[in-house]
Image (cartoon, rainbow, N blue to C red; front, side, top):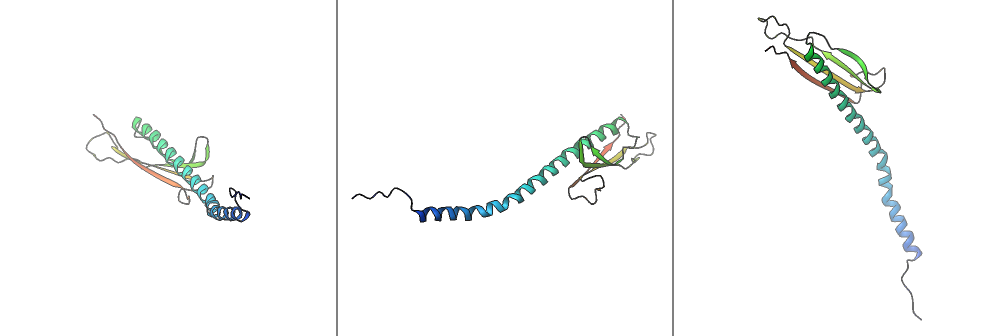
Length: 139
């Protein structure tokens, strides 16, 4: 009589399923943490993009007219109700008082954060602050 040993026994199958189950437990426990980190990275990336975009917009406005204050408080980005920003304009500095041009340098700060209508930059978990100096050159 010839014996055919080409299959798996029930014990081998149960052992393989048990080992596979034990190996999958840590992977399944890590999934919610990876999802949370992914969501936070999306928020941080959007904040960086929106803040840089707002800074460039304000800089172009300041370059066109350095005398106007561009400060804005707790505004929302277009089509994004949970992303807010402040623009802080220092009012300008006259570094060369001998000329009659007035202010020569402005410091513009854009503070962006993730939060609802009642949130503030100081209390936000996700926030970014960009600072730029703009000089007026009369030549």
